[in-house]
Image (cartoon, rainbow, N blue to C red; front, side):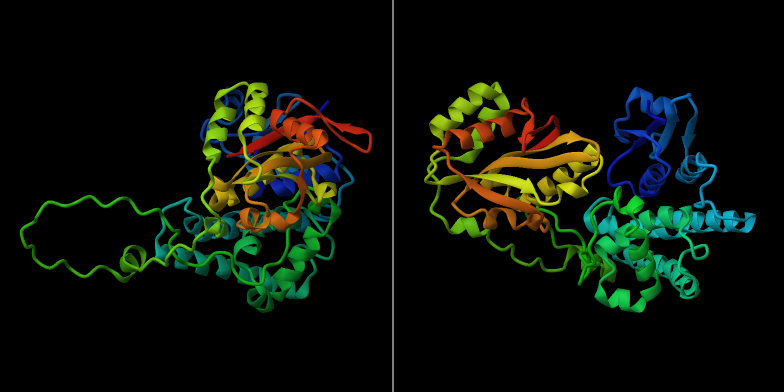
Length: 416
């Protein structure tokens, strides 16, 4: 029986350290993927604010607030060293957890969220958030000049918890030049990440050479212009503030053409197949697919994740698929497919099947930066085994069998 439930979602920074502690103490947690915008009744009962993480113990004990949850789970092991050896150690651990939770993470969020379009963009506000985040991280850099970990020379809960909170900085901003300026924070983060109890539950990580996000407004699709009625001559408008000019008046770079636009126009519209798949029972839709799709214009591909041995919780793996799906937006009209997680927590695989325009997978998939994490194998639509594979991947009603071992279907995403 699980020790309790943890309401969270895969990208939640405040949950990574909690999951690491649970692994360190061999605590079995039931992970409940929480929708904070449309919370379930059980989630609302546990946390009326519908915030994550939220813990509900098997004994009915409910805890909100990430620091409290992390300490509670850590304390289940009476011999743990993650809470320090002395009262001063314990107080220092709380200090650094609170510092990262209140000074580092909120400012990082205000730095990257507008650049991703998650919150309204304002150039000055992003600059201020960047300065505040780096000011806080500079305090950590100075502290780590004389110590391996945040509290002494042994890893503690402070490290596991705080590494999760600074993760987005390394994902989006902390490039080679930044790491040269902050060598102690870089060394500390890499050391914590490489702890087996942490890397087993954290998102895959690689250092970046250049920032993935810069302080420019996220591009929006231009709304169609309406023909304006003749106006009387108006007085000149006051000059806009510089920040407003940057946001609204900066010339937009022309959008590059997709490589597949160079192909002759297809006689078969892929959108028709997408409608068939959405509106018919799957067996009927598949029959229609084999009868109608011209494979001189389209090709079939088997897609398998290369790093299945690194997968942990199935809901996190499904979110990984979802991220891959989102990053394929630039090729949306040239592909259709499904990718799924098969198996159970800590023993699963990711694979799928796609139909794409053209004969080469790369122009379709390389719009997603993580496409190289997948292996692509071309399928033959006239081969019964390949057809059966495609049908299984698009039906979600059969287990995956690899070297005689069955992996039940856990979850998946439709790419259309």
